[in-house]
Image (tube, helix red, strand yellow):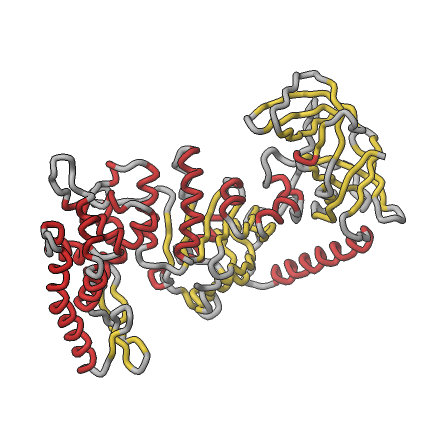
Length: 548
């Protein structure tokens, strides 16, 4: 499976930068979700890797092969990149059966492929199946109805699925009529000589050409496959269709039309069609958005299993953070065409790079609390927040705030210098959609219009990010509050607590009932509270928070 590398990839229309200087490495067999708000550049990134969209500049490699390079003038078309694309609307042919939809792409493949002997493959398959004739009979008899009539089509499908064979092999097997004989073993034994002779003839034919047949019945010479520009044989096509049909569990629907299928079944067909050519990379652009909530949950499980079964690299576009968190091995979070964070789901959730990431990921949303203060000699930060409440933040790991700001300012300067240098290039185009510092929301009882920070921010201005699960409601809590709202959702209850003029959101697990206006006490628990710089919006540290 290939590693995918994007180097300084940019896509713009005039002054609008859909993707701006994206650098990304996607590992073999990874399941990466491209996450972000609508219009952030997710789909554009996906389409550029797939070859459906041409970047303005940059370099893209798949499995060490350069598929796009703006400087070298390389742009490999999508059908030569060995990738599959699953569209949001399924794009099934309504006048074709499920089988025809899946096989359509395979029938149009004409490329350099190993030379293949379908007769030898079928003979070897039948010899394997006939080793247990009683099992064959049992499989066929299972398809006899109450009136004693055999459903031939159903029997063929059962044979295909049980023995992983083609429809041609299944029809040949049915023609032997093992199920009509009193001694199926004798019938099977009688068929073996002709099958062995066919297999020997195929091997002799290959030997006459100076070749051998491998286990897949492909021609080899000197240990290397013999290739030719050709189309897939009907046997190869059918085996591929049946293989993916087993994977997505739609073998019984092969003769149906898309209009006769449910939304989930149509989705499985679309996935099967994409998998049939055995792509090394599978791209999915919000494939579950048209399904109902229950079906979406089921299909998430199917996609997880599919990723393991196929061994392919999956790149998945969504704006649904639940899908991203549950499916991905890594999340690529984008905003305004710029990569914000590329990490494992739990790291994105627990260790957000900045306030935008913290705000976008998580439901209920994180609590942002403005705070100001300074670091003490023992490493803790003494902060004033929530209308003058004195809080103490203890970093999880050793922290020097002053040194952190020095590094952050140096990195920001280097970035600005690089942007200024790029702007001097005659080929450079000014970015119309300017990068703006994300304006986080501090929840208040009485909201007022925010005109931005009027006073200059200093190194002593911070933002505390408290996930709802870190807000603890207990009688021993050091903070007094009042229930503003309570929304039970079954296993948990989401509560908003009024603390002075501020609202804090918490999650309480279990069947606890609260009434609006109820006086309660609360505090903060765990060491997962995040400290951000208010000046640049970046994460400084994780730690615990308590009332002084």
